View 1 (cartoon, rainbow, N blue to C red):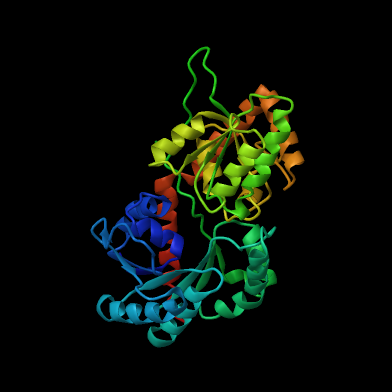
View 2 (view 1 turned 30 degrees about the vertical axis):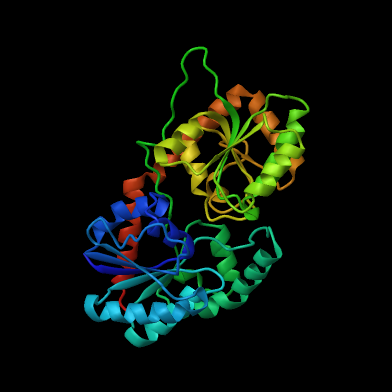
Amino acid sequence: MTRLLMITGLGSAKSLATGQRGAFHNMLEEFSQYWDRVDIICPRVESRESRVESLFGNVYLHISPWPLVLHPFWFLKKALELHKVQKFDLITVHEFPPFYNGIGARLLWNMIKVPYILEIMHVPGYPKAASLKEAFYKDLMRLFIRHDAVKSKAVRVINQNETPKFLIRAGIPSEKIKYIPAFYIDLDIFKKVDLRPGEDKKYDLVFAARLEKNKGILNLVKAVKVLKAEDPTIKLLIIGNGLLKPSLTRYVINNDLENNVDFSGWLEGPRDVAAAYNSAKVMVNPSFNEGGPRVVLEAMACGLPVITTKVGLMIDIIRDGENGLFVGWDPKDIATKIRLLLRDHNLRAKFSNEGLMLVKRFERKSAIKNYADSLKSVWTLGPK
């Protein structure tokens, strides 16, 4: 057993600070069992609804009171205070542009020489940018990441092909890159629910993600518009909230899709999400860039066949036409693949069975144990 310091980003901070039982919270519940103590340093969270300071008896949350631009300095100050007492064995650093976590980690290493691992969940804007900001961040990462990683003991990636290839081209030595999956699927919750005789599913399609440009949700809604011309009853369930919700709602209303698109918002817990997946025939992931996404694995565990863009982990696990369908970023192409799968019951059944077998490798307890064991194997190498 060892002591771990985790430096995470704003998304995880919001989830933990407000007491939500999101993916990070659920992972920590199991992960904490492998450590004497886990301290988590987060950026400032605006409009906190609660002040969660500790979890599971040995996980402690430290949220910056300073603005984000000053976060590396607060992070450094707080980490030094904690290390003086806790004597951390290892540090993990969730890294992404504009690199405030990596900068802080580098400064901290200069002072305490505790080994740290950069964790790169995905590259913004890669393989396709959804905005000028993403395109800029992709170029920034290509230029900066090799310098950012110089003092790190390793660089964790969560897919085997897309992110490693980008990082190697950016100048990170291949031997420093460690593939450690970050998808922990509770197969007791995410599981297939068989229909009763004569029963049909409420939705043809389901989408689950933050409603942001890089998730490609507008392309999917446009595809539904195309399909409605042939099948006025086509039905899509959108799970999630985000900045695009108002514009998506306007698009749905302006294109007379109110009876074809339902917004559920964020669902309360994993069982609610699993029930929503099971209410649909097909999961569609139209993302521009991803590390995973996890939601596709969850849907597979519920027996859903998958249509997805070539992003993140999908490149590793989907064999086009054998256990899923790849699609481009064009609404007409998405509509074509949806039409094909909805019309072919046997193909849907084949993809469903293949997905149920595939997702077993991401079973929650074993995947989290693998994460903890992998981190400790890096730690035993000792500091540079």
